[in-house]
Length: 375
Image: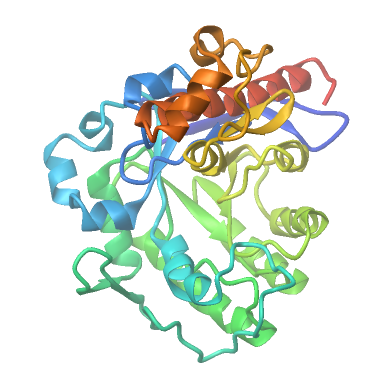
């Protein structure tokens, strides 16, 4: 189980300073949660991730189910021992893959509605590569093409064997181009799955419920009321988040309507630098995003000067003169650029380390501002 205590509430916004305590240590919130999909942050080992000021990681349930399998992880003593990670861990439920391997892949869309997103998804419509049923989802394995069924009971059983501190209820991350009819009917099914997830859990792990409803105000408020009334240990905000960042903030406010204030709130899959101050001001405590690691593997560094493409920038200067990470203290842009052009994996490793350190420091400074009453 977890303990969550709000230390201070901002007088300038809805931001909260808190401490989330698990058997594997404490997390100072608000906190950024890096993505360790297959029990690893790509290009870094666990000790290196610790040095980036990372407090907590999130792993992917369905990927770990496919490979290596939850039985192997359990035999190793659970994810913490399996990946040599001494701090808190989360696992998602597999619900995001219902979207990313389904309508997301089919329509080439993310969690936001964009102008080039053509076609409205209506109730009864099915993705081409998976089948959504009333009791769960039939996935196609990316490894061998076999069919695998995932429902609330299966998701919770697997997450219990993986052994993370915080697990999530099984859901459907709904697509941004879903019609109102689709979202309304899907919400009934999602609520059923989440309640079944709660009833299926036998472990002492903390279980977070997820608020859905897409971009529709009445459905978001309805979901907030239903999920907020159940004895979850915390709450995720999921699904699509509108057409603009301004609409995203409104959706967050609808989602919080009926959630207990004394429990942690996690925003799923959002955490670009420009988003972070906005979502923290609305009262988000935790948020995961693959931006720092994803962009690092494409040669992009986040710095105090802005975003830098190291494939193009090769000056003989520090990566970021205002950063105290070991990369910025010991390596220059021209060398990192050389590594990237030479296709050396060390270049990706250095950028991944720096980006994670930069993001964690960015959030650390916001915590300090909240503490001082300036945020």
